[in-house]
Length: 181
Image (tube, rainbow, N blue to C red; front, side):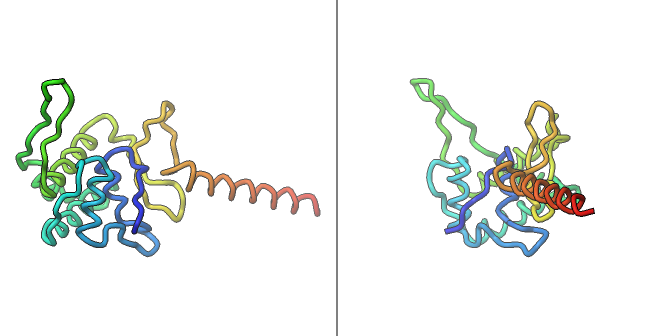
C-alpha cells in the first residue's frame, strides 16, 4: 500500500504530492480509485472511505495536474479549477451539543473542496509563500508558514536533512583537500 506525503500545509497542495518524483521519473501514489478514496480519508476531508468511480478518478487526476500547474506557474488551467470550485457543496453543520458535523459528500464534492482551497491559497496572502522544495531531486510543493518565511525544503526530516548532510560532507572534503596543499 502506497504511503502519502503530507508536507504541503494545505489540502490542495498535499493533493499535488499524489504524483511523486515529477521531475525524475514520476510515480503515482493514487494508482486506483480506491487509493484516491483512502487519500481523501487520510487527508481528513472525509471521515469514511467514499466511492470513487473511474470517471471521478480521471477528473481528480485532471484537477491535480491543473492545481500543480497553477501553483508552479507552468500551466494556467484556471478553467478546470473554476469548474470544480463553482459546484454546490453542503456546508458544515452544528449539532445540538455544538460540535462540528461535516455532511457526507462524494468524490465530486471533495474535489470541489480541493479546488476551493487552492483558490483561497492563490488569492490570499500565503500565495507568496507557496514554494517548491529546494532539493534537486524533489518537486514537492509546500506553503511556508514559518515566522521568517525562509523555509527551503518540503521537509527538514527528509530533503533538508539530506541537504545538510551533503553540505557537511562537502565541507569535510574541502578541509581534507586544503590540508594536502
